[in-house]
Image (tube, helix red, strand yellow):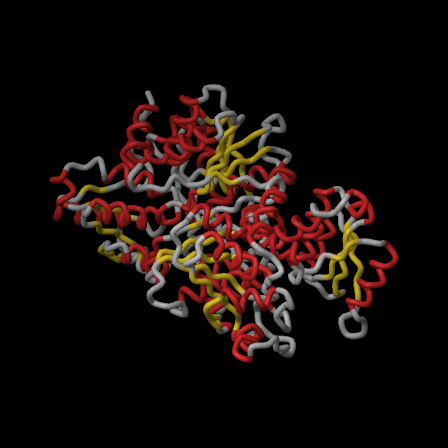
Length: 320
Length: 320
């Protein structure tokens, strides 16, 4: 029994519809030519907050009762999840508190604060963020919104695949990147329900191959903090709830090198004129660098987000 | 009497429909908040060849007779027009020759050659490109496609405004950047025909203010080669045909500094996740930096293109 089924994704779709963007599906003759496939990109870089994370956060926040909303919500994240929770809470009129390392990127901290969230900083070297979060939750009664390993979060992320398949029903395959597995888990459940014959693939950095290792071993493997440029995919282990979804539905996980990730970001900038963060380009890299089966003729790829700092973008552009 | 009327734009729209993209109109709450207006971006960076230039080139090429097409087409340009002519000719099955300086950006030369065009290089310091072009035209009988000052080119560019107003009919104002004036001229004619009360504005770099000076003086002024980063707007003087259109229809020309252009490119990268070349960001800069009248509540802005080299993009990102 998986932690969610397709009905949960459908419920999420209705719940987030007033708030989330139905992001466009992009195509490009150049991309088709380079990959030898018909490629459909679900552009979550154009989602509210610049990443798919808003879907899960919104589904969670708008599932809370008025009484729960009154006590506020709480999240720990230095990245897209923080911003997503802040933006979802703002729409629900709830107070959000986000626990962030003191050295989090200034742009992401500013965006999170800009959405009205209170930021609690901690020192990554000396303090335990989960303990801080627990203490804050006990004090305020706020609901903690997990970044990936929760049924409501996962069901929210699955709505991306639902929209993609509504627009392009005849896909041979679906690809999403693997951080904690919320995106791929939710999307796999939705896609397999809508189109049982679809083949589902994950993509993760070679340097952060926790899912790949875990699938080989048949159990969740924890890796040391991975030094990949794809900062959204630096989770140390598959989620308890997401791993069984990936085990059941995902045919294979493509491993992508750091150079391939950067080349995919550059390709998307130069040829498609869109800004995609390194994590978001991992799925596109799988298609660009021949890591999907040759008999996959059409593939939908979820571009997870577009939140990349300008100095990092400059570095990636210069590395060409 | 202007060189084109709205019927010419309508004819162009039908002629290019099978080949050109109907580009999306983008909106952004952040952009609306920053500008205090409702802003609608006509995203020609997603056009075939990455710029609006394909519209005019296509309209020209598909106006030629089979006999003329057999003799091929000819253009001189180091930028977006070269690529546009090459791509339009490719679709028409015609041979294209493009006269380009030997030091043209490699990416643009490669894209032009990639579309099957023959490139004739010349030395900018010692050779006269118009003389080369004339000689080639005499030898081959090829049709020369001017980059902006031709009725067919101008009418083609006007289709961008036609599409924008079809999607957002209630606009108070329209803004386009000013190079040779083909885009703004064509768009102004179309917009005023569709919605006579619309206010039309131009935007050009302070460093390349040939239109602004010409409007002050009431006649076409030629400036020295302008050192603006907006390489698509480095024309030295308004076109003979486009200048009267701007005189008749354009209320004012906003002048944009180099820093404002770069800031607009960065804003579009960071907040809207799209790649816009410096020339394409000039109109957005007019809105972002308060250069449009306060009583303009809703404005459509044509983003002219997205062809920027990665090293230039890196430089712009680093300048923040």
